[in-house]
Image 1 (tube, rainbow, N blue to C red):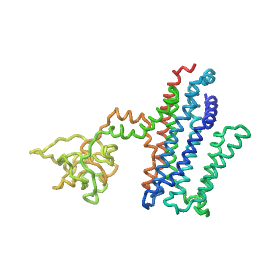
Image 2: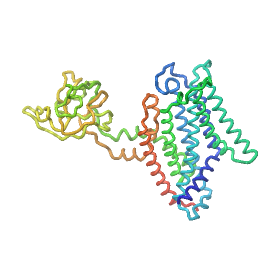
Image 3: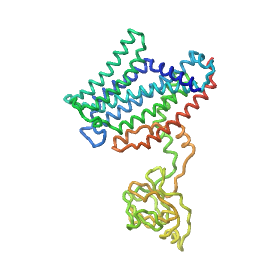
Image 4: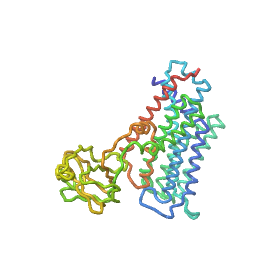
Length: 454
């Protein structure tokens, strides 16, 4: 199975990069990156100490979105051309009529398309990185970045010129040669640019290198692998037009998945938000011992009365996801007159965090740790307070989990907020990508096994 799969992948890769639409989309994104350096001057001089700030933040935002959309179009056109078109033209019969499994055909087609997609997306991202290095032209008097212009445009012109020459004299495929030459030339051009400042004076290579931007770019590459798998699955049963429609649908649903389904997964409603959390005593700071108390200042008073003895659940997410507190046992012991008894609100109240007292104006309350459980941390500013544990709805969770969530791959917000993207997150993202690809390819194999190609 391995040898036929690699052979099919190699042929698929060659066929993919030979398509004129491949080169057109790649060069079009480069042109759009150049235009973005002229049309994103809207920050009014605002700047921060982040890797990108001011006008460059908007440039990166628009540029990364351009690569995202361009990669989606590339995945749709390339994947459909290498599979659905062969099925419609009956050329796939020359493969399946041999002792080659249809699973090998699907895997080979996907792997070959992925390699082509990786080359195309990397070229697009290099164009984006060159644009970010150049910066936004806020006024006509702004100086040009000579290394970016000379080496960036030079790599494109040289690749196209050599491709045209080989096509004219040797009959080689122009799009194929242009893409395969542009891939190493653009990367080399960017690496050389990093060694010079805008005035072409030598500088350390790490001066203008932006590691967090590069991590965000890696997230886009992983998302393209998922979309390519979706395009491969759709093309196993549908024609080219419908496959493009399906890819567009997966793209839109993937971006709106959190809004359409994710927000309905967790069922809980906070009664207050903490603006300040203060331990009652120095020994209470860890909030791990029975009787430890915290005074919580609330942003606004609760809309409904919160009786003393009410259990308190807290966490950083307003939906109730990933609460710090576990599910507490139910206690109903009351003193005479319906007042919660000491077994519930006393310093040694068992197994729960609960309201110990409230201020007269209801803008602060005291909570006590009843012991009998472990807490990852004490209450903190920004936490949301709940009166019950969070329940999970199965139907939205299943739909949200099945649809590729493209928001996971969009790491730009962390870059613009000057937050470090941990490598562990990229590792989890890679694992999520493998799971989605595996599911999509299983669907593709099932659809292709039942399709009549004769």
